[in-house]
Image 1 (cartoon, helix red, strand yellow):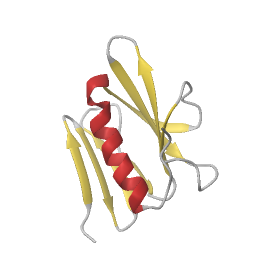
Image 2 (cartoon, one colour; image 1 turned 60 degrees about the horizontal axis):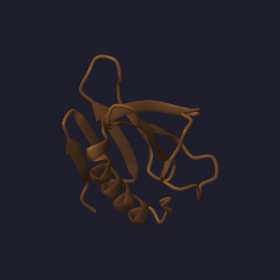
Image 3 (tube, rainbow, N blue to C red; image 1 turned 135 degrees about the horizontal axis):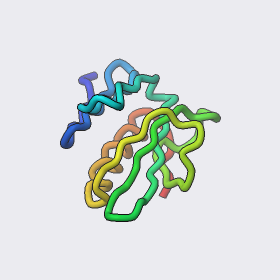
Length: 106
C-alpha cells in the first residue's frame, strides 16, 4: 500500500506501514509517531477562529480516531489551525479511520 500523506501549511501527516507520523515545522513541537491503531485526535474549538488538534494514544482500541473535546488531558502533541481548515483535516482522519477500521465521532 502506498503511504497516505497530508500536507497543509507547516503540518505534514503521514501513514506508512501502519505507522502514523506528525511533523510540524517550528522549533517548539517535534514529531509524533505511533501505530495508526493507537492514534487519536481531538479537536478543540478556540476563540479567534482557531481550532486546536490534540494528538495522543487511545485507551480502548475501539475509541474514535477523531472527535471533539473540551480537554487536552492525556494527549502528547497539539497543533493550532484555522477553524476554516478543520474540514480538510477531518476528511484525512476519516480516510484513516476507514483504513484502520476505526470509528470517527460525528
